[in-house]
Amino acid sequence: MPKGHHVVVVGGGFGGLQLVNDLKGAPVRVTLIDRRNHHLFQPLLYQVATTVLATSEIAWPIRQLYRGRPEVTTLLGEVKGVDASGKTVALANGQAISYDTLVLATGATHAYFGHDEWAPVAPGLKTLEDATTIRRRVLLAFEQAELENDPARRDALLTFTVIGAGPTGVELAGMIAEMAHRTLPAEFRRIDTRSARIVLVEAGPRILPAFTDELSAYARRELEGLGVEVWTGRPVTDCNAAGVMIGDEFVASRTLVWAAGVQASPAAEWLGIEADRAGRALVDEDLTAPGHRDVFVIGDTASVKQANGTPVPGIAPAAKQQGAFVARVIRARLEGRPAPGPFRYRHQGSLATIGKRAAIIDFGRIKLKGALAWWIWGIAHIYFLIGTRSRIAVAWSWLWIYLSGQHSARLITQKEILGEGASRLHH
Image (cartoon, rainbow, N blue to C red; front, top):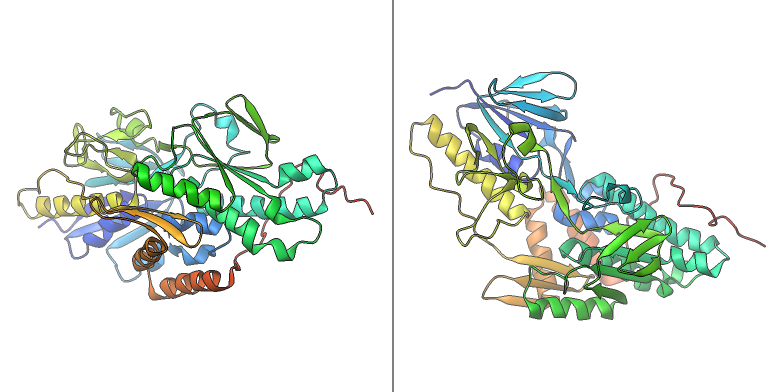
């Protein structure tokens, strides 16, 4: 067997790591390239943004994960292009990495639907840097409101707008509301944090459109019970430092968070293949790039159709299944066996939390909501965390918050100026 076969994996997310893990023992050399040195458990990223968890509880150094795998080389670098005919990957530093098999698992970033100028005032949530930026802005808004004497500016500081009501938007809005209405009131003297407005905006007719009407309606009622204003059927038409235009109505809001859409990495451009509207590469049924038998594209980078014609959702379980499938294909090729049949996604359920005591779960025939769903959601997420230490730390943080109502990760670690007016305290 070809022991020198070189597999290059670009992206250390769920799909990329699952692939590398499943290639253990195969006659290959693996080079894993990522522009960050850590693997991130993205489903809990919103909890870093809302002061529930620390960054170290949901991220792990990639080198540490593979310290016992001498056949795996980890490179910290950014890929800028692919030469499929020459079978090389171009890095930003000018180096070219050759491959026998290439797997692109480069993920996605925020999509502002042609309004990239909104990004500085309405950050999205895809990385640890995004999470700490949002956390800093949320905490600074309360701090600056405490200093502010002008009622209009204070109200704008205490208005938080989340744009997009998928799971991330719903989870962010619910946790910000929990913090404002239940965690912080006893800690401020000049403002009542319970007067904060949390506005959740969805252009579509209802929140959580991937869930059933019943579960979506339940989530809306729970959010409104937490004090969240849910606006549906009205698209955002402008974002700036002063606030957000929702349809034809302006809301003065100094803290905006974008959770409305994603744009795939430019993998399709690198390969010169067709992509969908979100930039995801249209791949063949075995997840190879059309015309490139030795290049696979997986996770949020790929557009994959299910048997019923609908696209495979861009969620962690799908990426993991794709990574495992590609590992089986590579093994079969190296061993001279027929490759497995076309990729088939197995949906394992959809989950979303609303605050710290309620959730919704859709397992198909089984649908759950409320406190029981929240406990199942928590157990499932703890199970998929990497390492005993992380599981214990996250379980303890959640238990502490559940019992005490206090968030332990409320640190402002970088200075940021949100605008004039916050320092105008008159004695």
